[in-house]
Amino acid sequence: MTVTLTDAALPNTPRETEKPARAYRGVAPEQRRAERQQRLLAAGLELFARQGYARTTIEQLCSEAKVTARHFYAIYPSREALLTDLYDRILQDLREAALVAINAPEQSFEEKIPRAMQALINHYLADSRLARVGVLESVGVSAAMETRRRAAIHDMAGVIEGFVNAMVSRGELPAHNYHLVCVALVGGINELLAEWLTVAEPPSITQLSHEIIRIFYALIRGSAVLPPTLLTQEITS
Image (cartoon, rainbow, N blue to C red; front, side, top):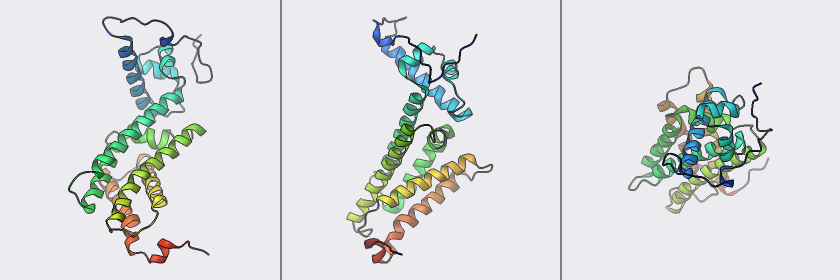
């Protein structure tokens, strides 16, 4: 009888770290573990993007990664733990790509914004599996994953907010708390990526990038032409 392993039925196998490990064919145990982890991450990216997180079993992940169930549980306690690690790595790479573009030396605002937005979109959509996992398959998994997603959105908003605050300090924008504007911008980009991933005939990556750049200019640069009262007072009905 074939038994399908699920998150709810964890095997009571010892962890690799609980017993002395020996080099195998000249490869240290730590290196073998790292190689298995990379294969599991690659398997997660492929299967979660291709057939969806909800339809992917640990058995399928092990088969794709060519590892045993015992080795899987020695690295990740659950399927969600693998998704979480993959999601964190995708978002960290995305954040670093944005920071490199934003912190490029000797570039004006007009040059940095298209460069930063293009870097974000190209990084995410050059391999659409990254966006599918980061934007679609990470949604609705669990309360813990939702908390992580919200933290990631606020982290990316913080990157943009730091850039915007630097513009304020240079007198390029009026003084204002731009936190919510930056959160709205990140949320909008997220929804546009979801649209690109799910519509039958998506726009080109270049078209999508241009639309995101226009939205950024409208939200951020538009603040410079708003009446001062809209920036300094709450709007009441």
